Image (cartoon, rainbow, N blue to C red; front, side, top):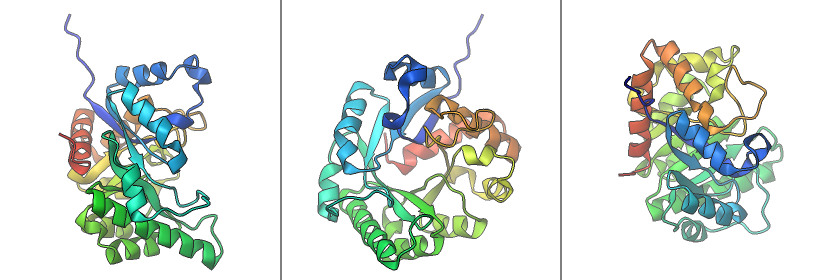
Length: 266
């Protein structure tokens, strides 16, 4: 009997270090094994604050199929804001392939001062990406206009990257695509009420799509409400396959190829 291996997938955005390992017998090996058993051949474990870098580096050193990023999430509070040069130094590890996650998040940020601080931090991340020639991982929430404006002002198009966990409308997607960015879909695209996002998912050119879990958050249907983990990225691929009326293998193969192109691997 011929055993067909699953078409390779990439989880282009996860937070392995935030996963509660209790359901994996307290062993990260089991998270990675389950991902591999479900066709996930590579994972990008994304940094939320620079103090996580030693943990991320150890993960990447232990698991050859794990890459990492360096950056500070817009909502993370730090005592010292790093310069672009300092961010670039943190990104020097050979497994570090991206700068971020960075961007703007106004959902919980109401004061002008706090928004300005996010904008300054975002500018430093874009500059770090240009210094290191490593693409950007961009998070935007209730801040699309300012996000796109800063990307344009700081010449983010020269390095590109990905709009991670995309949840905006088609206009925002088009403008991000015009700035040389890929659009990454998460478990949100499987949610019944995400009709606007599902329309966007039908329109983005196939060679500009990435898929992700953002685990341990945003588990896709039929696991919504449970802890997410990289093995479940295939449900995002399945949802895109259904929405676009394209076979699953095509989605898997194309999003994998897109990942390697976006992050300049191989």
